[in-house]
Amino acid sequence: MQNKTVENEHSRIAWTPEERAWKQSLKISDWEFSKIFPEAKKIWKEHIKVNKLALDFYLKHNRKVKNHIYGSSYNLKIKNLWIDIQDIFYDLNCKEHEDNIKKLERNLSYFDKKKPNSKTITDVDIAKAKAFLIEDLLEFDNSNSARCIFHNEKTASMHLYRDTNTVYCFGCNKKADSIDLAMEINGEDFLTTVRRLTN
Image (cartoon, rainbow, N blue to C red; front, side):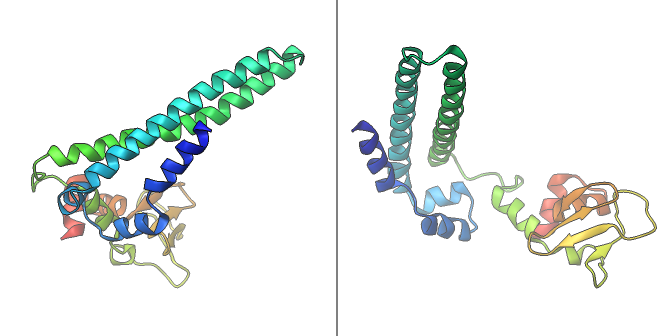
């Protein structure tokens, strides 16, 4: 009965995939989001409460199931196998709720913070820099290949994946996005590269 209550409460205040996609499409930082939608503070507090309830439920339920398995008439090998399966299942569920709690508590902290320093970069800046088209940094042939800039080679072994805006070199096994490429091409650090690509 408690499980049903937790699940119903969780689904009542959880973001739908459409809402989550909408938030991501805004391309604003978490700090900006907290200022635009102050009512999110109440929702995030509710999310934390629900995730803590669910976490508590899974931990208690796991103990009950283990006690039931130990008290059963199965041989020791089967008992241990069931315990291992049980631990994997509950570890996954508990980790998900623990991660949610951490993220939500971090989001809540933005309500008390001042505007970030203009010299710093945000997650939005990094996302914008990664969206910078790799074709504007490096020349590729008709088969989306180019000579790798991470190692010396005579034939093109670096392939461009346009759908993810990343490259992969089959010669040195290096995977890179536009930030990695720009850092290598210009010999600049991460912060300088992100600022350059976003401006």
